Image (cartoon, one colour):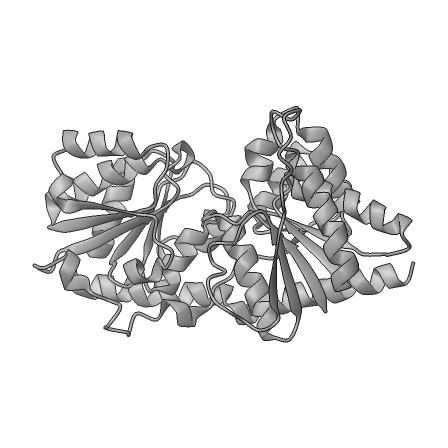
Length: 379
């Protein structure tokens, strides 16, 4: 099957999932065409059956803001025609779903039928999508999609709650390829470099935006570090970075905190970690938490959104109410208090992650593709 995948090519979860999905489909013999405005960050190697099409922008003084949606629509039409695509799979509603709809109608006028599937990832529904200026377009595009998927039951419920959706929605969770998170490779795992005296290593990975509440990681770490020697590794960057640096100095913990910036291969950090903290206000799924679990790292997270579907309370880690720093610290110390308890939770974390293995999830997408294409062919 020839599949066009539309995505945001950044470090965000939707772009990572879309890229990984495409590369995995390519391994199974499907021809994958990534269509976006720059090279996806996880598309960093040559691979058979994988192609990248850049959406070019037209610089004209009339436009204060370049009309990306129109440029994307035209590119979708061009790639579909010349590459003879069978299906478009767009990730993130804005503006990918509406662009796919416009492209579909243009292609119909040329006698070409092509279905498009929309996958919703979270903030396109729970944050951006709630803006009244976007709601009519999002609702229309979702309802006109040939199929709609979401990454969690929580996001499915949010979509039906906040939009007038008449289309059916299928839950297909995010996934992981476990080989990428194998911590047995000692050349990658250099724990003594970060914890020379055997300190516990705690990690957080995000885009440092307000919704992630990274300051709660620092306050929680302070409480942990007061009880046992620990190190904190912060991976990522974003608008809250300066605020975090100030909190670090105020708490006098900067000697035990390392801000590592954006790292493409987070498995190199996770493999030295003992605990992962994710105190977000909301997470439609929690891909960062899943990556930690696949690295045998137990997770302390909030109980919001899809996190309770990923992180099993009392088994792979613990769930706490948003902003409850005392509870997160207490739960963290339960796991870190003894080596035997930590080993137990590490094993259970990995076991929980197996529910989201690529082997379990990829066939669900392939079955959906076949079903949608067959249905269109019957029209």
